[in-house]
Amino acid sequence: MLFEIDNKKGTIFGIIFVALFSLLATYLSELRIFKSIGISPLIIGIVLGMIFANSLKSKFPKSWNRGVKFSTKTILRLGIVLYGFRLTLQNLQEVGLNGFSVAILIVCFTFILGYFFGVKVLKMDKKLTILISVGSSICGAAAVLATESVLKSQAYKSTIAVSTVVIFGTIAMFLYPFMYKAGFINLDVFNMGVYIGGTLHEVAHVVGAGNALGTEVSENAVIVKMIRVMLLAPFLIILSIFIIKTGLSKSDEKKKITIPWFAVMFMLVVGVNSFDFLPNVAVDYINIIDTFILTMAMSALGMETTFEKFKNVGFKPLILALVLFIWLIFGGYYIVKLF
Image (cartoon, rainbow, N blue to C red; front, side, top):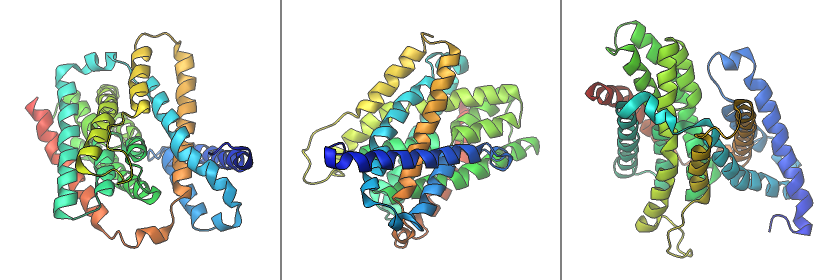
């Protein structure tokens, strides 16, 4: 156990060490160079963690690894639960049935396309394929983290998936406003917001692209993006069933469906937040704390990722992410036009 007397000291020091990385990532994210391109502390955290893992990790006590693992599991799940304070059920009403339908269709088609193209065409590892697909279809790094917790996959696979989110999400954040202003995207202001929110990877990418096109576009984009985030909980429950049915679970585990408790708690928090039980100031502070917690999880994830684990992966993950990126641009556009 992590918190037995013999392990307690190393676990606590490991958690504190991860927290210090998270503080540094949070500080760096406030610098103009990172804010201007929408790089969140989560992304900076995983990069810092990877730098540490591939340079100085061997010089630190191995007992601290228990705290790192605790951050990638328990602290991560707490972060996903608290993520629910960013959402309300009223978000569904603000964009109506059209926005809700677009979000569901894009999430479903993107994930299905990603899974079959990755597994059947590229012959990729199933867990890595799922992580990349969910990162593109739902909510970027946060979705990858939550899914990794259900899949119980190796840390480096999550790191690869998050890397694809950073690369193509950042490209999209600059590309969409350019294409819209150049006349390549024939959508009104409302539907442009739906399009951005329905197809960009990270919340930060959505905010960046939306703000470049005005308040109305930005507001609708964020709402649709939040609907995609809400779909994370039912997705994780369905995924846990899928894992059992397809044999992705370990052979020595009992063949039973396990509902991820943090996904259920996430939806409960969304429900509670919809009734405004807490003042806005309190919710704002909770969201700040939650971002820090998720940054800790990402930093810890990076600390368990060494470059040598990437050697046998090749370019296939990048190809899959590129295919999904192109699908989101064109497929997402026609889905929005359909509604």
